[in-house]
Length: 195
Ligand code: GAR
Image 1 (spheres, helix red, strand yellow):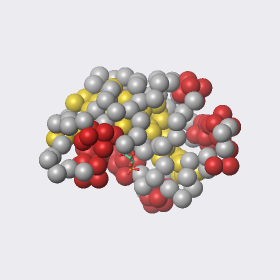
Image 2 (cartoon, rainbow, N blue to C red):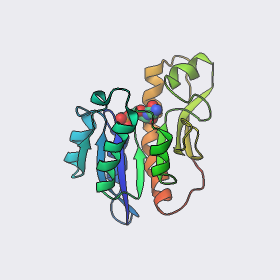
Image 3 (cartoon, rainbow, N blue to C red):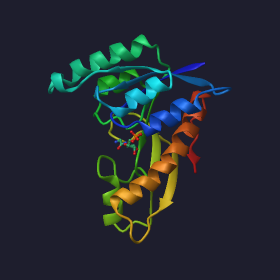
Image 4 (cartoon, rainbow, N blue to C red):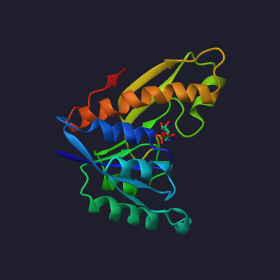
């Protein structure tokens, strides 16, 4: 059984879908949920699901990313994770952190990568006049939002979409995509899934 740690920064809707998916004959289980924000709403949801949680507030560390990440690693590694799933974790990670979890860390990003790495993905897709938007799950490498793509889900951009309406429709697809990709990844399948 693979042990999965999930990192969040906010409401954690993707985390809930991941944790709920890991039951029965699923090859993995959620063992810990961590956040850089002690007030993240997802931490309560994780505890309600019976998953242990921790928080490492990034703010007292200021610009000392290495010290923040050392504390993150200490908490994560205490749970002996085989897989780290970033699910709305909004801190940029150093190459050292990425190397520590090399080949076993996934992220979900709300765009059809390689389009729109970084922030404000939905506004940028609308502004560009794109016909489609979506979400990608990828392996995390040292380059931001640029690791090998493990799966994508697409939605049409509608004429009166604004960033919020598009984000809500993409999020529904994220909730299908991430559990499906994680299950395959936990079983050793890194081939790409298109929904
Ligand atoms: C999701 O839309 C996720 O794709 C995005 O944050 C949201 C978190 O929602 N992630 C990023 O933008 C990463 N750069 P959730 O907390 O409800 O899962």
